[in-house]
Image (cartoon, rainbow, N blue to C red):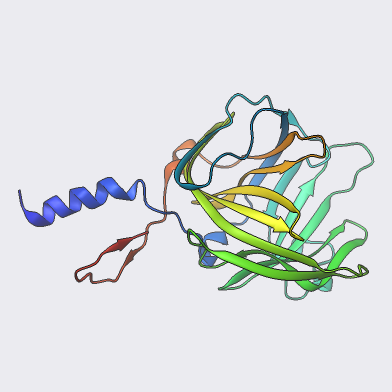
Length: 252
């Protein structure tokens, strides 16, 4: 068999298991919406860290969260207080279906190197903002990345220290579908509180957050996509370097 053909077949076989990466442009997906659903478990946890992990949460029974409702990624002009956050270029809108609840908006700034939270509002008032913004992701977000930052909320005396680690990637099985090549990030606040969030990369978006409760249970917050076709779940972003390759070829 032709050596080039052999190499092509080999490369095709390994890219399915390649390390997923989040880069800044992956976030450029607007008007994507998610229905927020919750579950609680005393037996299931955040699971293992590492490469090629499978997390199976298909047995969880989900309930709709009327407080959170539907979350939509929007353009900044659609936020009611966008002018108060001039560096924002994305808004997450949470549309509550609970009675007497206003919609809420969270404002973000995304650059080539960072995604940070600037503040939040309801339809009628600003609820919080930061002197030093709250870092959510750094780019490129590659396996093993550790980002440490300090945020300061307006009106709060104590700053928030946070460490975000890309600690795992693999496949997550949810009650509404299986997602391959997902990224998990652990988030440690003030060295005491740790939660976990899983992201898909194509298109970029959250899938699941897991956080502990004071009673020892785990709270599961699922982001069920409303606008994505099933076949999109298994797409990947693969990067090959150097290009052209010499003696060493890296596929990530």
